Length: 264
Image (cartoon, rainbow, N blue to C red; front, top):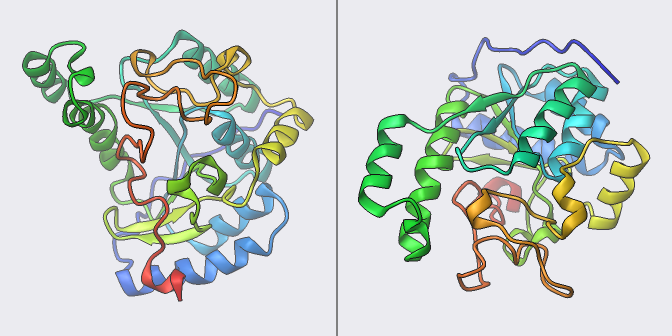
């Protein structure tokens, strides 16, 4: 599959009020639940929201499945990834393979140089391992702030979140109003099990990160990711020196929370 997909940059959805966005999210959440395939869900998302819709991909299995659905749907979606400066080589190989397969460009969003230099000067190159606060500060500079820049003005944000990924994500909705970002946050694979995901990836021969075959079900920055051991949770290899409870980088801190409207 190779498609020339145009990236839609205007108009951005800055005029969407919180009340309207929340109502839209509630209706879209119900609609997506009734659709069978991710391609149908992507098309419904594009039809429901005006302006730019952005997909932030980490190149993991979930996000590769979403990318395949975007290409299959020919939907007008802005695709980007956060280049933290510390990715595995295999992650960049996955970007190149995906662009070649689907005929689209994945924008690389880098941290602010000044913020990054000040962080490293203060904490050192491995300072993120000294405390949870230092690790979160590193994630904030390398991930959270670049994400906020990339999403500015967008009306929708597509993610690869699944309820089965962790306890903290057990209530992830298909669509919810994200007040912090001021847009509708979308998780078209929210109800998928890992078995459903793996079958979809295999059936469509979707490009995947080679590290998945070596015990890395969840892949982040190289210094913060290890292979998991037999029987461990799929996210046990992320920031493994920390407590197993609630480990997040800050991109999806409220991943399990619905807005008031989507809870109703």
